[in-house]
Image 1 (cartoon, one colour):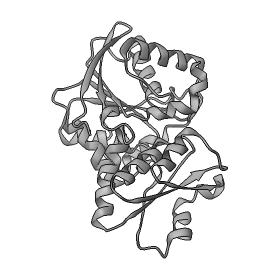
Image 2 (spheres, rainbow, N blue to C red):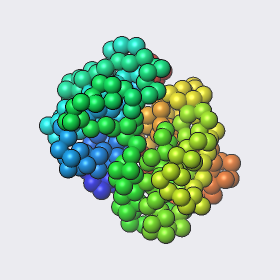
Image 3 (tube, helix red, strand yellow):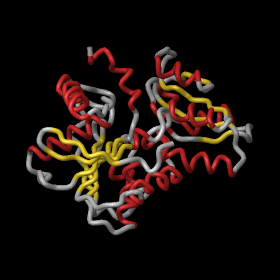
Length: 287
């Protein structure tokens, strides 16, 4: 484990950018996945639960993180995988770490608590982990990112799918009374709901700004412009971005600077939340 994760300064398109390298924490339980699972695993241990049940799509970094983390901690893991049964490199890695996969139709998948109850209601050894790790335990882990910062920043950026990581960051900013604006980039269409999700965990949203126009067509959607941005940024800085989360956030940063919404001389920190294996689902687009 590389903790606290380092902050690297890079230059790209004439702008200096600081990157919090949570992607370097662990090769498989990296970024916000490690932050979220830290206290989930602690809670499971305190309750003497040995079998984690979770949920995700066929290219879910969350599933891979759970699989690797449970293997390291000598626990069992089962995942309900959304959609028809498939085989891909991500799921193969999950199985290598010992995770059992249960494919479930998309309609049934929407009712995660019901699935859990249907299959595991009589098993006292299991522990429910929501999709993406969303939980109050995850919030505590993500808030610790702010506590690791040894200097101030005008702006902090993060990508968002469920809003848990963003809520933790905002809680940390508010707790330390920092003069920092948190910019959240939803990676799916209709991302306005993210602010409501954040508000479930943190009521003071004064330092939050949501930018909902950088989804590039929706969750797991890309465009040639985004793919070219990833190629350009990675070859210029040596930092690999994934096409699902971090690339959309990074693109937003430089677009907002170009538009004058973020001042060019502002001190900006980008949280790299890992998830690099997500590139496997789009690898043909980089050829």
